Length: 379
Image 1 (cartoon, rainbow, N blue to C red):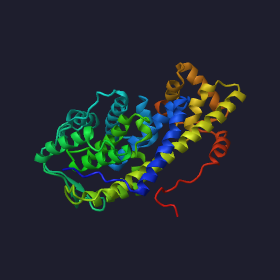
Image 2: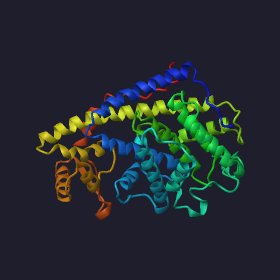
Image 3: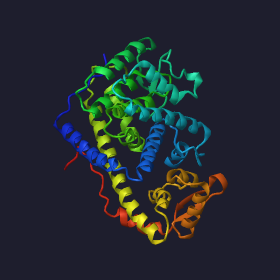
Image 4: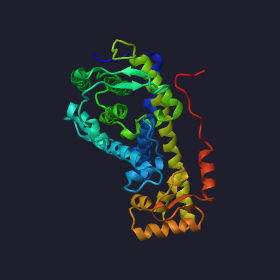
């Protein structure tokens, strides 16, 4: 028996409707294939990977994750954390590829173990891609010596994962995708079928459920970035402990978990919608500035990351703009001369931050941004 999917109440249905409206608006924008959409999708994926690994204690900057995704060396991340990020990046790339595999797709144990091996294959001592062969405990965030949750015995894992796979293929298909994704997350993390990487795999499975829906690119549906922020991470552990219980207890009420996840999805949708609007306005404004300065519009591919506070790397700009190495060098040099970018570091560590001319654009474009709202607090 798995943890059961609750029926959404009136407030949940209202929140789901609001999330769908935000996704609908973003879908229309993305269908127009704006020139900045690729950069936004990479940035959202990097934020999800950074957030999910931060929860597990492997902190990395979004800049470094983006660099790894572009095939560049990270500037601040050590080898241990880099290995975790690379594994997660491989698994997420495959999940994104599974978004359009057609109607013949089915979940199975091999898929789950394969994703786990992509994510944890650098830990050969922890049986990556194979069910655990012993007990496992989840420690409390308050005290690492105290077990907050004891997972089912290793002998129960094959049957429970089979039941979960059957549910993924056939169960609660009429439930909203946000609810199904959240229940997939909850059940996998509580089965805890592997020695390590269970939290990241459970969050990745949630994203895969969204990817298979095919309505939005999966990077716009992941809540890993939101979960990776300090107070949200603590709340995440608390609600998992509250709903999951001290041990496998599928009879417990799962409604608090669903409400927690819906709040996270609503907030993440607000963030994605905000970034989409900001980048659209920023591209128009920066393209106008480039034209006034006699520059090709392609240089906005370098200015846009600087606008949202990321480090600009010449090689990544070259990829994004689809230009030669020499052209990228000339463009970056001109943007520095005009005060749009400021260089930092040397050799392979060379990168660029926003220059003084970016201040006015940032202030103008961001002045219309409204504060985030809590969908369950309308007082």
